[in-house]
Amino acid sequence: MNLVFSDHVKKRMRQRGIEKWEVEHILKYPLYVRKSFEGKKEAVGEMRNRKIKIVFIEVDKYIRVITVI
Image (cartoon, rainbow, N blue to C red; front, side):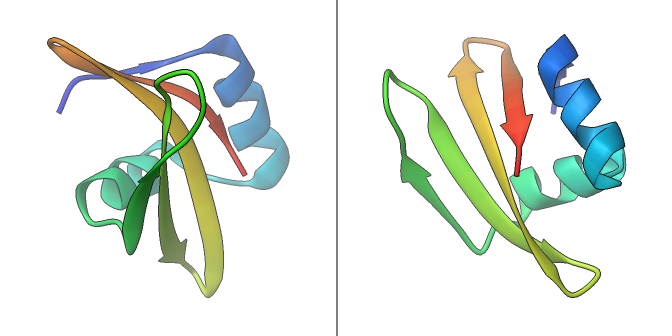
């Protein structure tokens, strides 16, 4: 899975103590995925006893991660 991380998501990951491997895991094995606004999607998963929501866009050959909450 080719992932592209925006500067915004990198900042949010540092602030929230979320590791890159956790984002990759949730995108591969989400509890659920739903459509968001403007073509974006949200994947929700659970890591280390907390829920993490990942907002992303699927592009032809990669996934652009927008933010994590």
